[in-house]
Image (cartoon, rainbow over all chains, first blue to last red; front, side, top):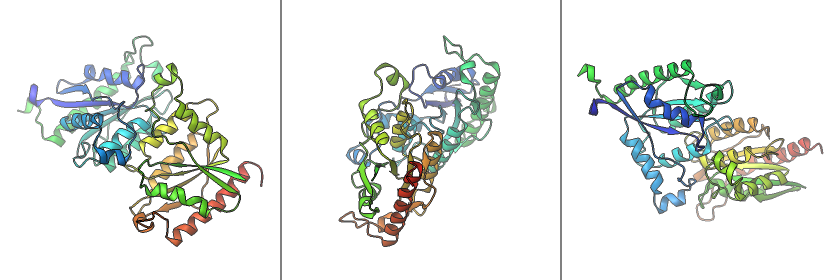
Length: 195
Length: 187
């Protein structure tokens, strides 16, 4: 496999240790087809609040590390909760920082979005706002299948936080399969079977 | 007297939105008193684990107290990547978790300055949505979009010099004063 494998980094929009979204992020490698390698991007927890005056003094190291990981990847999956009907401020702050880079890591990058939420919309409002912001940075977003994990508390094991709900697993698998094809189309990375 | 708190979405010293924020007292009708909100620059990125272990950071409480004490809030913000600046949204995310959530029932007005032609419309509509969730009352009209803003401020003094913009803002502030009175049941 090796070089022909699609390299994907995942970004979680929540910093909470017991986050359902972080649990979903952790579940992705086991649900992915063999053609995708998935690993988490460095945390954005230490990125300062965006201030152009700080940027003029030099890019903070956590911003550069985050951007480098995104640049090195063939694709990015963002797994995020919805805060107040939109994108978590901390996640948006990280995107605001990288958007100022000359070589914006999201430009032309294949991105898929997933969200878990306690309610029945499953984070839909966050996802469409994220699409709006990622349009501004010229990311190339997978359209379907969409992954909205509604009533998240029922879909993960209460103690281990393992994703236990089979329909959710199936839905995520379908997205990951579609994302592999999408990334290959964007990057021109040929699948092993076709080589 | 209506006490109005202003929150600027940019931390940059030379920010056009900060200039606009500073221009408001001059453009306001009698009976409006302005104060700038404490900065959100040192509010940590939201993490429920911080909230549940060490509690709400002092900067979050200070911002929330200032919002609670005000009769109305004006948010003046740039647009970042077609939406709300992450730092401003992070501050809103923090205060939204407080009991006695400070935006509930609060009159809000929005303004934005941006170099482009849209004048920050997208940040405003995204903020309106978040404010609906927070049960705030956002003034509908007049809207203030300061587009092509570089030409509307004096480059050296930073003063808002564009007369048409000044008049729009005056109209919004008059409308906001009445709106605050109506929501407070005073008018």
